[in-house]
Image (cartoon, rainbow, N blue to C red; front, side):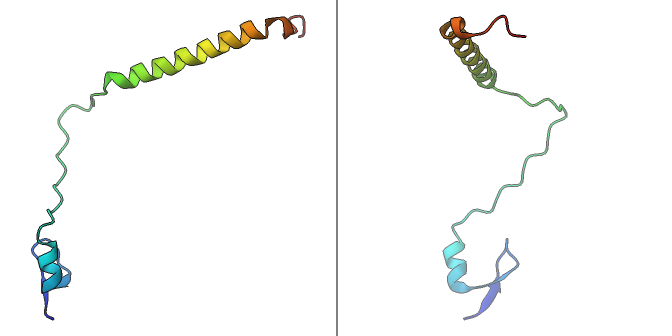
Length: 76
């Protein structure tokens, strides 16, 4: 077996490994950031947070209604 360096990888590989890995695409370089620092956030994130807050408030209201007579309101 002979060890040959590949174009993308500088490690030494055998010819069998080279033929196996020939179909693997090299990773794409990341795109540089644009001039604006503001990144777009999808509206679903705010809708999800709003829904969670509404469920928490509803749960609190239902709990207070259910246990209203057992809460010692005169306790300090």
